[in-house]
Length: 233
Image 1 (tube, rainbow, N blue to C red):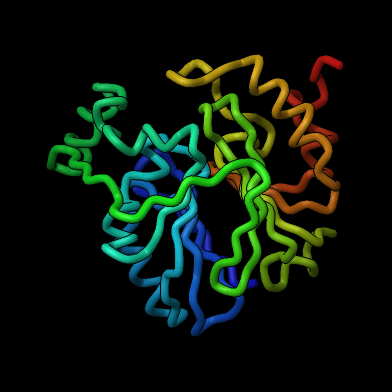
Image 2: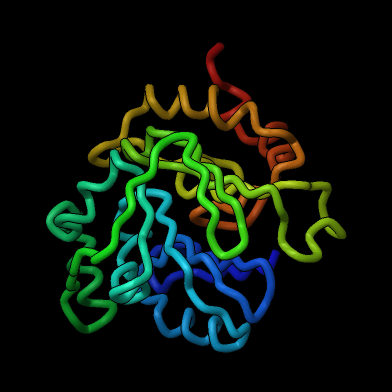
């Protein structure tokens, strides 16, 4: 699986481009703030055509560029419980964040809701760009936070680590940490349940591609991540 990851220009949010092979259709995950130029370069270099955009949740740093990336035709997929966030993204964002945006980019943030939005739920299986994605609902960071499971791994990764599947975790699970729960829509109890019931059962051979920071594996996180080791029974 061709896998390209690069950080957005704000908050180091990881944007992922996934495809079966170069020269094919691709899926874009979490196009955050200021990713359009880099994304165009990636698509041109690898001769890729966007088939869909997947959103792990509805926070501004993960969805800000979804509308220009999708255009009029490409669908954006988001969990039904976070669908409301796309109606008024900036109105639901922290005013301090918007002021920082204007200072960094020299222009006020703008938002237009995507034209084609598809709601997904737990257990949804998506076949897109020659890849299959299983949706795992894992609320806590937001009501509609999800992870996307793929029964393939990035090209060449098996030479580095013992993995046989990939999980795009958004802000549910990071290397050494988990997503915060103190923002509107966050729920500490729901996050604990998601970690216990959705994350912990993942096989050790799962490659974790998180919404921020570096990739990791479930074997490593199970052994070292304090938020997983210290889960209540």
